[in-house]
Image (cartoon, rainbow, N blue to C red):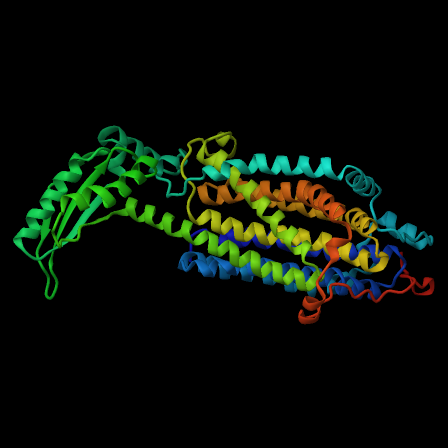
Length: 510
């Protein structure tokens, strides 16, 4: 298991647990204020918000388990553990939470709300006046609002295209009294140059005397290559039973282990210097060492990223298409989630790779982005962003089925869920931001990226960009070809068992 797995599970479990519980609790409280019984309020919340939470949790698990496609055991362990951390609060929200609300009864409401309910003042309209005005403003200025939101997300996501993946060295470690790695690195770099902390290794099997001569020539050629301080004299280890002898030489690069020049040097030595030094020879000379290993690991994960993203997006698209009976809504959701992830990546590149405002989050020295981080963050962010999409659009879908008017459905859905989504997002931002205080650079990076992404997703994407796009698309939002309609299974998010509230069954004991 990766060392950061427990912190990741805590971070995700707290985040989704707050989201799921708040969404169901808000719907239950709204039903109580409409004058429904406690039992009917809970059952309706379970049949509407509870189903939305269930599908939101499934999309999060799909995104997390998509990391299994990368084929790296460290990520696979983190993916399974994080999925369990999502399923546990998901099950609690579907079982324990309704039981607790049933025990509380009307005391789930505030005192003022209980007094109003006892006086017969029912609240039939769940929408927030503030969010209702905002929804109408977005409708009236859909093009300007959409373009403004898109420009902001694009500007924040632009640094993503300059991301350089690699393993940061000890120069990025904290300088607190409890750690000595940074000071040790600085002493070694000052005394022996930065490359001393991450030497490269030339390794080759030796079968004949000619192999020994060729390996010595390769070592000399590498030592003269640009970007190399020096190469040690070859060391020849005798053959073991049934194995060839082994030759090893140390190569000290000019740059530090995390420097881009070191990555370029590794590529140049493998593709040009070593082949040119072994013309016509059958000797295989390998370039290894921890620095080369980290460079290869980053390259492998980078090559897997497009496959991973495609799998997660495709599976989420299919699930949302089944749930919302639409083609454009899941397509829009996928694009918006990709936009949120790109903005988060752009921010962490600017802070941790370029060093912008790094001292504010305890990362004053820049370095490359750990290759595990983009895959891990994308899985988590895609899943959590899909949560807000499901919460928002499920209510819009519910209003669309009632009204058959796209503009009214979009406005009503935003007016009803806007406060809940932003409240849940604010709590999640606090949870994620708390991890910025940890000493681990990777967890600090995840905390910064996810807090930023959740803030942008809830305050810009879901409350500005998505409504603007849905107003622009109008009734096409809910279009599904007939041939596809017949072939897709039916999974309904809405199961509103409530009828007109019965005053005689209204909760008592205010």
